[in-house]
Image (cartoon, rainbow, N blue to C red; front, side):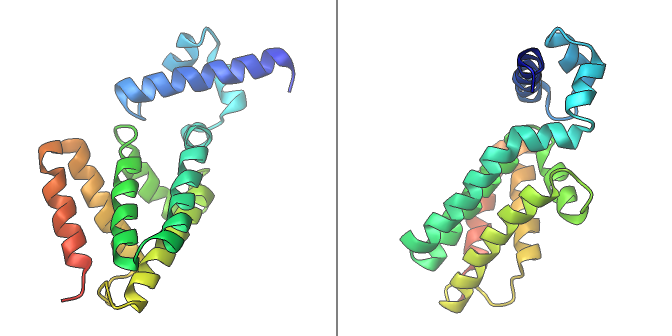
Length: 179
């Protein structure tokens, strides 16, 4: 990539992060380009879709969430590892307002630019869930899909009713445990 194109790319990412922090992920892409001092054609040349922009911004943090799961597999008892990862996944899903819905939708849409990163992260969480189930610490009737729906619900709560987040996470994690 040419040096000027690289600078434009980095400016777009910087302004997108600021805009997503301030206004959520549904902020105007044209406004992001304008804030970067660039035309919208430059933005769309680098990022043809909102999801491609989000994928670039979230790539490292989604990989870190997967790495966290991998590290927890080796370091903590199975139930505790899953609980720690669920809390991290909820925090990640609320990095930007509106993100949780886009992440969940991308898991069902193989054409989404976010799909592969989200699928890899989901796979890491599935391994933690299965390990905890095999150890008898987590209910056997919980599926990975169900777990992600619960994570999404907790993330929605964190975004829309933050004062209730701790209680929702406590009930979620307690509900996973075997009796």
